[in-house]
Every structure is written in C-alpha cells, then in structure tokens.
Amino acid sequence: MNTTMPEDLPLAPPPRRALLREGRAITDFLALAPRLLRSPPRTAKPQRIVVLPGFGADDRSTWPLRRILDRAGHTTETWGLGRNLAGLNIRHRYEDVSGPWQLQPPPARYSGEASVPILCDRMVGQIRQRFAADDPPVVLIGWSLGGVVAREVARELPRQIAQVITLGTPVQGGPKYTAAASVFRKRGMDLDWIERGIELRAATPIEVPITSVVSRSDAIVAAGAAMDRSSPRVRHVLVDAPHLSLCWRPEVWRIVLDALEQGR
Image (tube, one colour):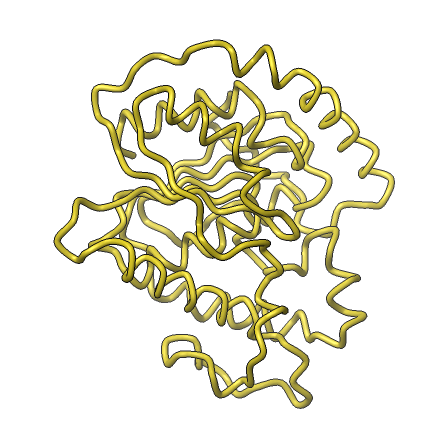
C-alpha cells in the first residue's frame, strides 16, 4: 500500500496486451474461500454501508467485500439496481437528465451519452427512499463505475453520505480512458462530450471524505484516470492488483476497513 502517488500514472486507455495482467484475478478468485474464513478485527464504529458494483457486474461481484465488512461488525447493503449497465438499459431522452447534469448542450446526435447521469439520478432516488434525511449518514463503496455513481450521490446528498470509498474508479474522462472506450465509441457515443460534462461537474466539489484506491497495474481503467484532482478531501491509496479482483483482495479489504475506522 502506498499513499504517495507518482506523477507518471498513464491517462490513456490501457493497451490490449495489458489485459493479460487481469488474468491474476483468476488466482484471487480461487483463493477467496480460505481468505474469507479469516475474521477481520471487530469495528468500534459500526456503520451502514451500500456497495455498488462495476460496469457489467451485479451484487454477486461485491459479495466477498460485503461479507468481510459484515463480519467486522458493519451492516452492508446492495445497491438495489441489479446489473450495472451504465444506464444503457434505462430508456430515456437527454431531456430526462436532472437539472444538475444539464451543464452543456446535448451532442449533435444523442447516442446515450447521458446514460450514466440517468443511472446516478436513480441511485440518488434509492438513497432518499431507503434512508431518512435524519438517519446517520451512510458510507458508499463503489467498484469501478459503481464508484462514479457513488461520487455523484455524495455530490448531491452530502448530508446523507458519511464518506465514499472508490476502487479503480474512472474519475477523469468517464469511459474515455478505459478498456471499454472502443465499445462506447462503436455505439456512436461522443466520449469527448462525456469528458467535458465530467469536468463541468467537478466545479461543484464533493464535500465528504473520499478514499480512492488506485491500481497501477489496472488493465481496465487507466491509473491516471482514477486520480481525483478536484475533490478537497480525497486520499489516494496505490496498490498493485487486477481491476477485476479489487473487491476480492485482502490488501484492499484492509484499506477499506481502515478508512471506515478513521472516518476519512
């Protein structure tokens, strides 16, 4: 674990050959059973936590992390929106995006560029429905795209969110600097438009503490894209782990548990 972030982290889609590094996730998956048998230290500060999966994944992918947190004495919940398809499964028009997101004119030919904002709006509704405004603030933990959603919920509902923890989350550029960039371009999406929208959103800072776990060997999200350069209360933690197993690694579990104890 390293909290001193180098300046040379790449800000470009990982090369295809780098995907071979993600094969290490198979080893992590096979090692899950014995790892999950170990009991983490019991927390003195039990918290309610919502864990959000990454793009293409559902709540099964985050179960190992949730199990560890539950065994530590926290109370975890799933995000409640099924498989995370970046909002592409939600029928909508650009005009359906809520006011805070309408920061620039729509693309010349709308191809779903605002699907993630639509998804973020849904998650804001989930939090408002599930937690009363006077309840103790909850923690949001998001893996990859789930972290994007978690951050935007915290931006909109700072009084209801205690802190945000992101794991390999593309903070800069949206999908532009990820291995999925070509997939979205083939759908006709204007990734530069998405990036500009994210930059405009960053002008409204996230007020809650953020712990951002960044993997230098991530072959899905460029490590440089996971760097948050706009939030005033962010702490970056550098690890060496495949993107696909960030929820399954004891090293990451310890970082998450520490962030929860410290209330970062």
